[in-house]
Image 1 (cartoon, rainbow, N blue to C red):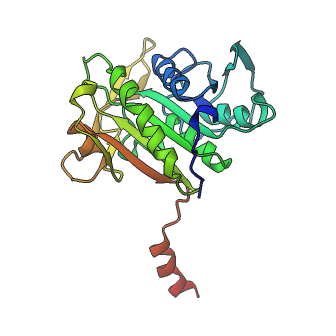
Image 2: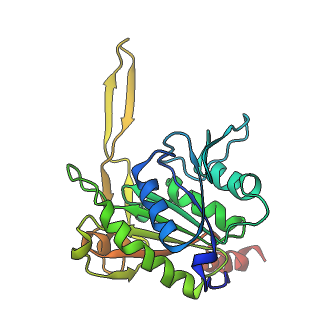
Length: 260
């Protein structure tokens, strides 16, 4: 188990994201972190890395640029940022907690397998540091309600770190697209079903060559109670513990009967 963090004010917090060092959501998360801790560091990608997943850069060198005091940009993926943040940028003492986000757009259901936001938290867990990922649901043509995340995130961080969680687990948090005063509550949920890729746009480029662009449309189940998607669409904050160990133990036991 990752132990509880009883004193967040003195905890060392490392922040990363997948939207890049200049992303509005990162600035929101920085304010949140500074409101609960005196020791906050930022190591984020130079440019947007959405849907980078848990990819690691191994075929070229990485450049680390100091933006300001305790703020760094890396020309790599969210995974690179957390790896270098923990093992290279921060000297003398490892972070006590990693916060990733706040992503512009939800990371619900199967989104988490593509998400660089979730991958940053996953890398932290693999390196032995507790981590939480944060995403703000966005409805098309609506302004992003960053105030909802900023209002609710500090207390969610305090409550979660008060109890701790398993060493193979990261905490995935999604905020609904409603004003903070209209949030119906905080609910602990399982992953729902939400898959990108149903909208494929076929076009010709200026040279007449065909291409396919993967669109944003998702096939999703908004009706099944107890899922992250249903909760967020109903106006609740969804808190989902995700396990880095992908082993399916029921199937493993079944396979053992035929391969014994």
